[in-house]
Image 1 (spheres, helix red, strand yellow):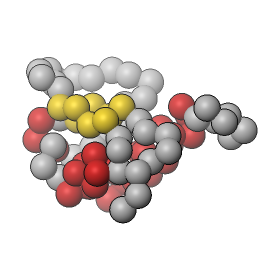
Image 2: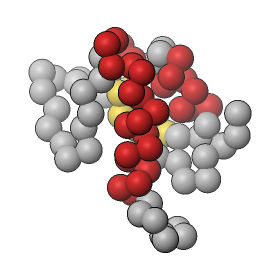
Image 3: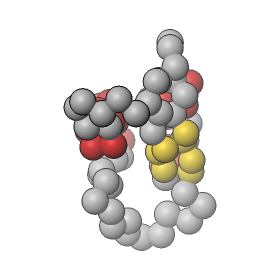
Image 4: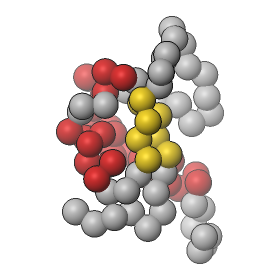
Length: 76
């Protein structure tokens, strides 16, 4: 699998670090960091609900984050 030319910084709940999907993102060159203390609620304009039932949407969340961080036409 190739390295991402535009890597993201992705924070995950400690229980998700070992997910195959999360490991694949790290292998692609994204910076994956477990939250030291995820608390009870995370509020963020870039937050996505992610649990076992939503794992199939990890790639969709990454695509949406990439579009927000690197809008079309942005060559950085």
